[in-house]
Image 1 (cartoon, one colour):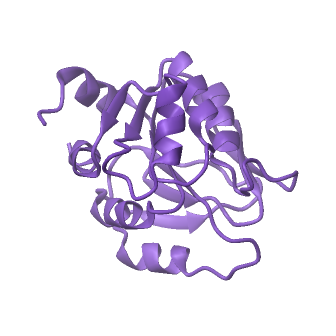
Image 2 (cartoon, rainbow, N blue to C red):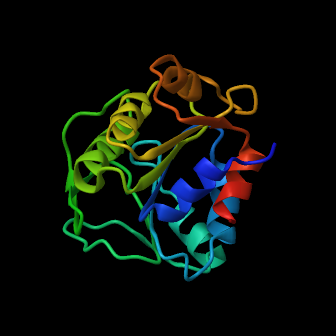
Amino acid sequence: MELSTDIVERWHQSDVLLLGGSAGSFKLLFRTVKSLAANLGKTVIIIIHRKKNYFSEIEKLFGQHSRMYLREICDKDVIKKNTIYIAPANYHTLIENEKQFSLDVSESVWYSKPSIDVTFDTAAEAFGNRCTAILLSGANQDGAEGLLKLRKKGSLTIVQDPSDAEMADMPNAAIHLKAADYILTAEDIFKLLQL
């Protein structure tokens, strides 16, 4: 598919790339992390569901293959461009303002901590229309409402095509809420992020 001028321009105008995913999203996230340019000029925030109290090598694996500086988010971290931030397990990642993260230990949302909804929701408040937010494969509805809030604020919102996703529940939930400006295959998402 040829990507429209609208989607390309809005991607270029974004300051922040938000990537949310759960079951079935790892391969696309890994491929994206490997391919993003070191001087992208954006902040990248990844929220991926993980099992509670389960040791994960995600940060190490992603960090070894990223051209951008990559780190797991710590409480009160300052948000910088040309950095990939990964939400830690067992915390919700909130964006306090456009300059700082905070971590929260409140109840799981959609059985998930970190919750994509929580981060997307606070990103909408902090960044308004300056985000590109992409919701990928997953087995529950987390992220759909946060994506809708971002869309209402004017950010570019994209959902992985459910027919292309390993787990269609998460993309379907966002489509049902009319939270997506665009529905793209994994290949088209990857193509956009290279432009």
